[in-house]
Length: 404
Image 1 (cartoon, rainbow, N blue to C red):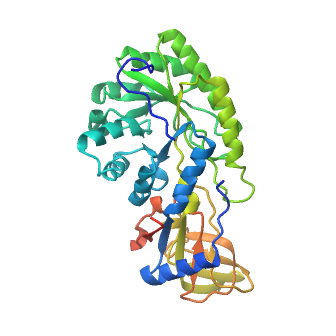
Image 2 (tube, rainbow, N blue to C red):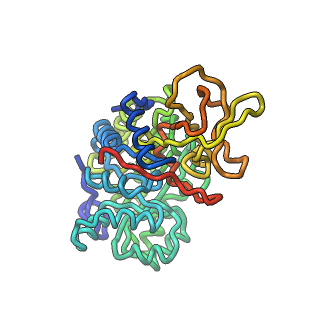
Image 3 (tube, rainbow, N blue to C red):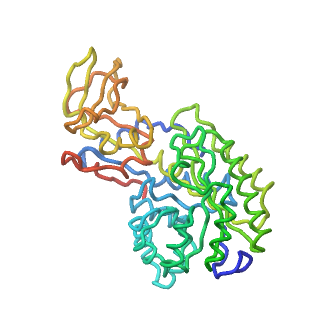
């Protein structure tokens, strides 16, 4: 395995603008207005140059880390294509996500495409249906696991996969906690790795995830220390090298000015990784939110207004069952902003469905709006449109691409 234990996978190859609170310029607002006029509303506008800039920023501050975009953050095929074209790899968590990536590298001959998938995709869902494992096996991708039952399934249905053990690590202070559902307890980690080898499988690495939108950087420090300890014990017990470490996602986006700088985190990660791991350790990361959150804007239209509970109330044609779903599932507040100027009043904003749950905010600061006026929300690219539904028959916002 060329220095990565026995089994056949070659080492993952290395490749070679702090995310701020976005601000739309007057020219940008004019463009959004023109797009809304051309395409109707609601529209979900994806700026591909911002995605490219975010990728470059990540690589600038963590040049030794290989970037595997977490497709679940925003699975739009255009985003996948843009990231593929600039050298990104991919973290998928379902067979449909796998196929989105597969279909967007269609310019490769079949053999080259299979080799690319083998080296550039990690299937990072620790629980996989049997039919998914059967479909994946011919590609021999990296797949994660965190329990003995999953190991038995992999041994039967995808024995050619490379394995990565996901660890349970602290998620304290992260916006979305993940450790209650995923990750092997550190105390059983080495035994699971030994069990995998005993089954004839090849464990190539460890992974962890400190929780989405992690602003407590000590989570990373503790996770790295746990991983280093487990790798040392594994290599002592098995005489096999572990040379992949996947540090997951969680890299914070500046939804508001108080969010700590990614540059600070990058310096801390660099220092700890150099201190704890050998130079030939292959470091992977799975940024999702960091690459796409500030690249998208939603534009919606006021379709109704009323005065209730002492304040103006506006009803728009997008809501929490659609692009604003991140307010429910991702715990992010997206301020609703107006293209109009004027004295602002505390206002409520509701989505279009016949459900009181479809409340975007009770405290928007808006000027007086009329039916037909446009509103928008920035920084809404991650875990938003990806969760849109057709509830009440209302379709998701139309996707519009710029700077492709």
